[in-house]
Length: 464
View 1 (cartoon, one colour):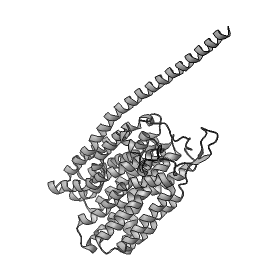
View 2 (tube, one colour; view 1 turned 90 degrees about the horizontal axis):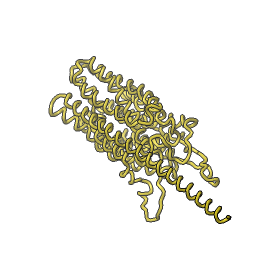
View 3 (cartoon, rainbow, N blue to C red; view 1 turned 45 degrees about the horizontal axis):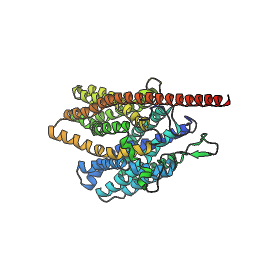
View 4 (cartoon, rainbow, N blue to C red; view 1 turned 180 degrees about the vertical axis):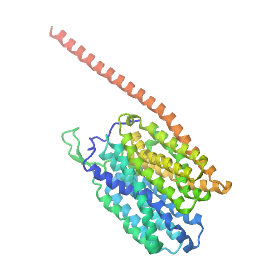
């Protein structure tokens, strides 16, 4: 496992300058990627009545979109490694816009699955991963802060789109709203156009000129023989032998079963307790506000000298904190209890989201991050797709939401504890490897000095 706070890019990232423009553009792209599928639920009731379908059938629109976004991760990684972030994000914006405009002319629910779910999901995948990857090429010392600020785009865009979608729905219906939203998502193309590759002169050899990173050369592993396949050129399968990556992947597979369901069922849970619709919806606003403010704060905290060297423990705490919140939720009485839960859950969710990709980059390094996140997302798309339906099945089976929250709490608390234990041994093993490498280096230096001394002594004896 590479050291947590070292850069192996072959150059020194600027840690500022145009990098802050990159953070702003990633703020937009990441915001649309995570917030857009959630914001579409405003239109579900009218679409359900229009096509005469069940609620579960209409709910698959967002589920397919999120699952496609995760499943398309390796494709996005290959394109980023080959062409760089800028063109991939711009194509992603076009795909989301095309999907929404096509969906506005839909005649069946399957049409929406294909246009919004598949085409739009691919577009969101092409927005998410390139934005995360390019931040790692511009930042190293301030990378946790940059990632935290970029990830704040999700709650900000959600907080903006929710009332906007309601206004569009009241004014133009779902078809007109989809057409307008298709135009709005083209702003991702503008954000992508700002993602110019970082230029830096590599000073290791005098013949090297200014190179562009985050382009075709950035994350692709070196090809030693012509017999290697195209897949091996752009997807680093050796990551499955990486200790830190495997710890991250195993824990995330478990936690994603309980990651989205508590947000999805928060308002229905409130209504189940007899709370009116507006008060129930306001819980999501409280959740979004807490989430919005804690993400940059988490980035600041993760960038400090006390947290940065052991940031994996910070992530383990955030995962465990989510689990504790869900386990305590059914024990909080009345609407006041749900408000308290929404505040603390928003803080927990925001902390986890701000650290989710920073910790992966800390483990595998910026050069291998694009491939690593692609492999993670395609494996995680299963839990993302199945988590909410499993939680819904628990509600149907027991007629109560508390068992769903208990289950989600366990799904979050168990990987949190797993991360604490495994990273303790991982950090310990890393320290041993560093010490062993230092000893070997000193031994090699002593051997060289001894050989030089013996050679000089032999020459002196010959001269005499």
